[in-house]
Length: 503
Image (cartoon, rainbow, N blue to C red):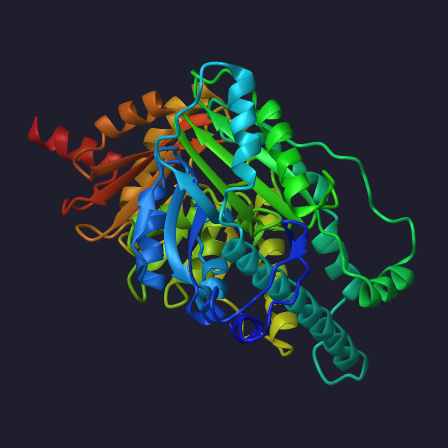
């Protein structure tokens, strides 16, 4: 937070060439950065828009508008709250809104529409959004620099024997060896919304000089920013493609600012979001999705951290609750819970030893990152990982307050056929360990037919209170919110004995 405050108090002297001249910051056209109000847009897991809006209201005190385009929310903040925005747990990507058109009138001829996009670039109020981008970029650079310093200090302490020894080579491997897995995860988790996404492709204009020459040149000459335009389009009645919109709008942006187009090594990413007749122009504030914050060891069905947070919010954890994920996989849900609800205890369990090992490694990675960030040993997190059988949990009856888990969809993990036996057994064992009356369960599954059938046979112990439809890896899935009924758990063998006595 201090980095943002420091950045907002500095004069924004970046050379943003507007109308062939630098942006001039004067008292007449700009309030102090700390008082500047801007509209922030955020992409969120589809189906959890309301959950994200509630988090924004609670943590930032800002009213929130949910977009007609699913998976996006908008809210107004002062620039001094920018660091807090990056700490939101329910958002994937952030951008500052340049201008919003609620009912943009598209013409019928493609050439005329594209010409309007070209003209639009010179009419937009770029000044304040670019100032926010500059502050955000400054904050990220200072954060990266501070992280590097803390890593060096931590390494020195370890070498001097003042702190617990950490294998730096393994830590580095831990953070970098799963880049390929991250790309695979993105592939599986792209939302299956009918939209055409295209990026303005520019020439690679990166300098071939070494970093020393480049940095010395920056000190003497104004830096020309590199940019790209990304168009996200959804709707059936458009006479143009996303590629055409990005190309023509991007060309006009280039002419207006005299920036250089670069698809990969860009400084500024301009967003052109089109949903039916709604058009929103923005500037990206995140380089990669914020959902990557916790997981370093990925599995075949790793759940996004933002989706895990949304599921946890649905069950409204209270202080001292025992929260269990009996099918944890890589541990995304309990790890997210342990970082946000530190006054609860979280248990991650799975029957697969590889999954338990991944969850344990992710917990260890999170502790290591916390230690590097703080520059001192961490006291740990209220979480533990264990291997167990979901149908025979080593937990006392009625000892769990909340169960949150991602059930096997029967696609990449398990099978639809096995789910017909697995789901009823899971619900039965969950009802045993969950506290009657106050216990809650939030369960995610794409196999809704099987789950509905299993739940129909458990209505004496589980009551459904809500269903949230979400998009997971291109699949339409459901998050079921259940309440444990007051009825005490009776083992099936005891039920059979009671029936025999009655007869």
